[in-house]
Image (cartoon, rainbow, N blue to C red):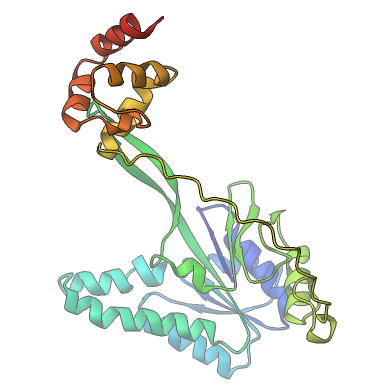
Length: 305
């Protein structure tokens, strides 16, 4: 399981709470300057404090926990293995950000994820999140910046490696973004704890709602409905002669006036019967975009009757 969120969203507290309910023993791989230890009076757990976030350090710690028979490991946080001191990005930077550097670092990152997924127990990873933005320009060249969401600080796509991926907000609400446990999918939990762990336990024990057991799945096959006459395929709309940018601009300009515009273009010989305004020539479309007000005035004057 992975839990991602901004600072203060409750990732560490929630992870330790769930870990204490899922297994009888817990170990924490702590990269957050021993922040997990403030909860040691609430839950007992072993701690491995890392000061170097080289992926191999995580791998070694996980292997030691497995040898000790620890049932649940909390990695707080996995983000440092990517962007922290000696992490994957730091390794690439030190090697000159070359393709050859990535060819050495990527297998190490893959080995870390493989070690996590093959751990003989439960693993809960926390990850930091950052707001991501996208820049774009409108038809007039004006720059706008749009918030596109929150991105986990780790390798792109790592969220989908986990059986359960959840995010937490500033009010300590957990949203299940992806889950192989059907009962958790899409759910939101305020201050998650025993309820979430109980669902996970039932799922792991094969008792959660979802696919029925094989012996229960024998259902009579439904009879097929009588064949109906084939429905004729609709004819495709006329293919546009215009680039997408011109279509977008003209769609806004023609909104509510499409019929008059089509009539006007037929009069001008730009399109034929059965064609849409998108079949005009790109040259004529450019003239319209250059003088939109004059064009609409001509359309109204010619076709208003």
